[in-house]
Image 1 (tube, rainbow, N blue to C red):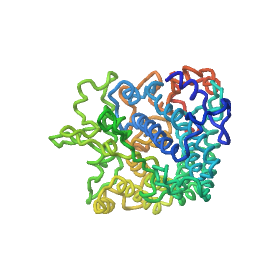
Image 2 (tube, helix red, strand yellow):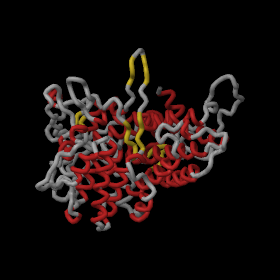
Image 3 (cartoon, one colour):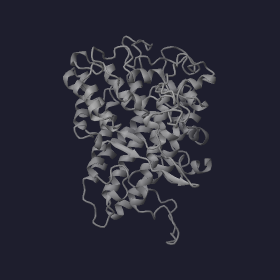
Image 4 (cartoon, rainbow, N blue to C red):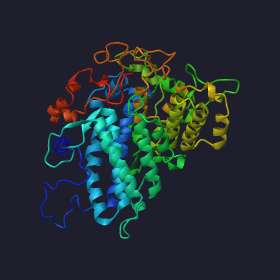
Length: 520
């Protein structure tokens, strides 16, 4: 695999216009090659592998953002903020080798056949993946990725990736608005995300753009009105959300469940912070005489079986450097197991990947409007975000209505806080890379000095772990800011990495802010 990676991935960054024909030799029509598969055969794998890489990044982001605590070596390292290259390798591999590497051929084939909707879908995934992973890693090969023969591509910073990919998203929208060639395969033939609806792909593109522009909230490039304009064209309902249904497969006379969180969360456990947010047990939580438990609680928080007792959360301020030890038995597992644990709906065998949802769009809108002091409209968007997430999780409509009318949800616009908005978004984006983006962007629960301050901080209770990796985070005003560089680059392309950022080999590199995470 290392040899394959050095050939395919470390030669990575892309020119969307064409693929260099550095192996331009005569093709044997009787042998398969990268040019043979049609667009409808390529797109399913591209979507599936993108979901794998994206959700793998989300699991790691959830460990750093204290939604879950890890019990295996790599995951425990992430939970204590020792962000090792080994712990963050995997999202990089399915993105470069299995996904992005195939998109140029999809686009080329689409251009040959007039399959414009496939081109549009491919460009969306291209832009989506590169921006998402640039947010996590800070820098990565882009402009020289997949340029034939280049074994040591330069690493590009995220601002360049954003600049290029925002243009590509506009190109994707234009392609999806075209009428396909009559002989081109219908998008429905290869589209496992939206069943061939180009209008939903267009909404997705606008939603990704809104998400990206909202990341810039601490920069001089932030444009609140542009975000609101994009949200008008983005997913507004649960049915327009990008929900990927994993396809299980038969293997050795048994069924292998492909649900990514089912695979990823065998050893992780929920934290106290995450459970407290769901149960409205945090400083400044909405409360009153008509409180009601969140109907998502039993979907998201496991219970032990057969006792039916709800699991406690892992208090990251108590677990020592050595990890859980025998105390692991105190916490119910996230994977549902008959007679053992009810598990979490996100980790069920048939779970979907929530890649971009209308709930997220509503919470972005609530944040923007709140910061414009339009609290009445912000309150409506906040409630819409809760509602849509519950609909995605298939909470009964009567329970949704009852909860939204309860005092466990803010009812007075003047009482609404940014913390309440973002904590509900934190719940709705469980195991998403966006949680890490948000906690960084809003400075965890710290004040202007960078130190934990529950009175003014946004993410109440999200503290530095007791077992915090002090080599990287030596003082209490330092917080995680990025993933480490994946070891593939360290092993095969170190000089390019150092040329882009000499700090990349430092123990404190993961506390270095990425380009939009500026300190005010």
